[in-house]
Image (cartoon, rainbow, N blue to C red; front, side, top):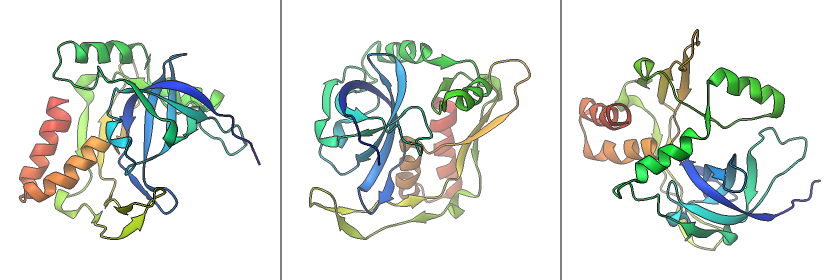
Length: 233
């Protein structure tokens, strides 16, 4: 048994995964961000999708919360922390609205400061200290957006079941979507082995979930997803 030591830290939220169903926590989301006091990556979990404060946790918002690192033997990832949801306080949302002049430039400046040279280096670092988060800039000429199967055959488990969350509120369990989207690329270094990674980002999977109801033609749906998550990106 390990006792958790809680401390308040400020985090810049960078990424959110598509929600997962949890019998204990309801619909939960894993988030990745940057600790403001030491400029290190952090993963905080679980954050309840249905909690009142979650709707304010947009990408690139800064917030303070009490978090705790579990140092037990089962801890396999350097950046993973538990969070006390009730302690979440938004401190700065000036980088949330991308229509504001200069926001993209400021976001890019922050992320460039976190760059690693390659996936190979991150994998080596994992063997040293269990580093499991990182950001690289791939060779843009090698990037491919892949849909692993016919888009109308991607499995989606639509849930109508209602449950109570920790706040005693009735919530609908999230739809479960098959992992069928990925990116293939090479790092921007010599002799890089080609990589392929599944994408479970909130925006991509939520777009698929919503757009499949709007664009009934599979080819049109596939075109819209590729237009947003490859051409525009």
